[in-house]
Image 1 (tube, rainbow, N blue to C red):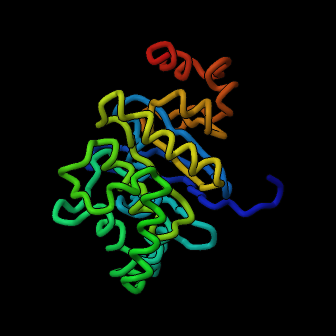
Image 2: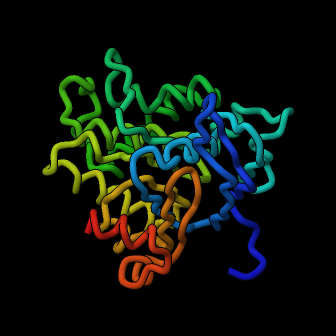
Length: 246
């Protein structure tokens, strides 16, 4: 990893919601091409941290960079940051009145000014990439949850992001639909996409993650490669958590 500039750098991040401290001095770095899985109990700050990376959640204090772009800087062009950071949510957030193809085309056309024909061509290629070539003209209401989430991933990829953030992308899915979404995410990881994934899908962690981050009470408790993390965790808090989920 050497002298490579981190793709994502979070330094001493704090986030307060009134008297509740959701993040308490969180710091970490992610290199280009790394896949990092973030786990922890409900309310541990995982989603707040993820949303702060593309400034959906402004920090109370601290700094975040994407490459050399200062995400939390006062003069930062947030639109540019959101072009560089794709986000996939637990709920699919697709426009119900637009087809799968149109949902994917919308961002490049409206934000980047991509010509319609080019946006449509690229959207079809992305639908093929996520295994949904035959759903180009389907509306979200006619798609399964797993199919909708794959369209949402394709929509995020359409902006050509440097980093993909996934906030519990399979938690709203029926069990039989989870694999089809995870397979797409595994393909992205194999292709070298930088990814930060909040999830408790341990199979994905072992198959694709370079590191696992455990958060609790707004702090990072432990970070390590999957084998070490799951088989010989160091911190007692980590051990107690893993006893409940493994």
